[in-house]
Amino acid sequence: MKKRVLFAIALLAASMLYFSTAVPVFAQNGPRGSLRAGAAKVDITPAEDELPETSQGILDHIFVRAIVFSNGSKKGAFLTVDSAGAGGYDEIARWAESNLDIPYGNILFSATHTHSSARIPREKMTAALQEALTKAHDNMQPAKLGYGESVSYINVSRDIFDQDRRTWWEGPNYDGMSDKTVAVIVFETLDGKPFACYANYAVHAVVTGNTDMVSGDIPGATSSYVESGYGDDFVACWASGAAGDQNPVYFQQTFDLRDIRIKDYAERGEDISNRMPPGGQGLDRTKPEVQRLLNEQKMMIQSMGQMLGEAIRYAIEGIRRFETEITINSGFKTVSVPGRRNTNMQGRAGYQGVWEDAEDVQIGLALLMIDDIPVTAVNGEVYNKIAVRLKRESPYSRTMMTTVASVPGVSARGFGAGYIPDDESFGNETFEVLSGRYKPGYAESAIVNGLLDLIHEATH
Image (cartoon, rainbow, N blue to C red; front, top):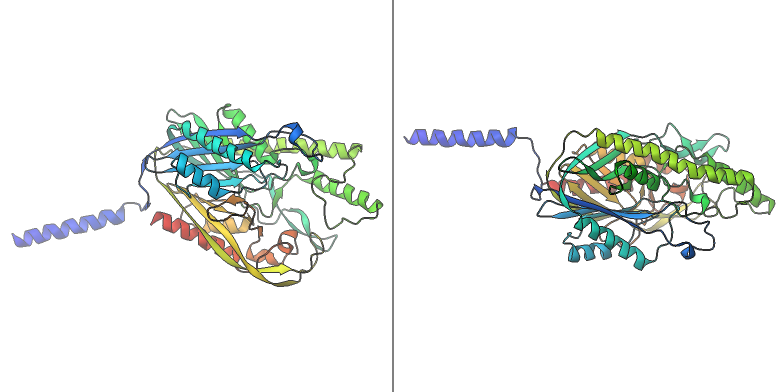
């Protein structure tokens, strides 16, 4: 009898070992529960009389967008703003924790990085962020979630060795690293009606900068196109991927306007060939050629917004598997990277930097993870190759990197960490490298390993 009991115990232990190793590993720290989600957007476009004297008016409206979700035990949120940068994480996160029961660190907050946004007073911006989160929270309903991908070819590496100038410059480098992935998280009602998405893509929102008009640029046009296609109550959050070295592929109007300004300034005895005044400053808007190019810029954001919007819709329509039971995990940290300072600033690009040691630079990292979808965040303008490396090394195939983010514990705005080149690109005499604050060989690994650590901690 004793032998039989021992045999039974051994058999039970063996079977438990078998099933513990045979079942797919999906370790999550947080509990799993039924998904509820809601979304909202709030218009933050200033009135005409609130614009500065240099403004040429309003091209299109800009928004705060929010998606709030819960699994019954924990809440999280995606929060995006049509702005150059996102700041004040602690203020909005502490408010949401107190008023909406969203844990501190569970809001992934980022800017679309449009270069045509307006200066919004802090009080107005704070109120809009709170309103968007509150409305999204109030709109929560039973939902299901899916993840999809597609590709879009509207981005291109912008760091190029110019054969005419015989130096590094800004231009379309078709052979350079440029991740074309469009990554999308979609939220649907239980009967299959999409009502919100979070879309991540790497491209700089710089098309309409010369117009000096308020605009959401490519991100704004993309979100509006997707929202129009799914209905007025749909909310399309747009997140900037690792676009530190990524321009729109169609950017000739800006290059032509630069040449016109350089010539006009030279006639007045001023050389701006290796620097550029902000926006459209100095442009003679009475010239027919200038008017044509500015109008083409306005058309280009609609064209590229439609193309990227179609890629987002394609990703959504291709999703076949949805989850109604989810886990929510998060994390954040700050990594310190050795710094340097360029003492030989001669312009935008194409010259040799002279460097001296400087104080360490702090880079803020964050993670908001829904099931096996890690959405990571960095508070700077990260080069594309760094995100590609992160996705390659991540144990989760659905990993995203959102940049120009406002992260917990870092007071600076979303681009406070500045341009962050990958290790290989530090030899390029581009404006991102020459204006940067990082010693070569540190930032890339600090970001990738730091985010991988956050993912590991969230899942073990």
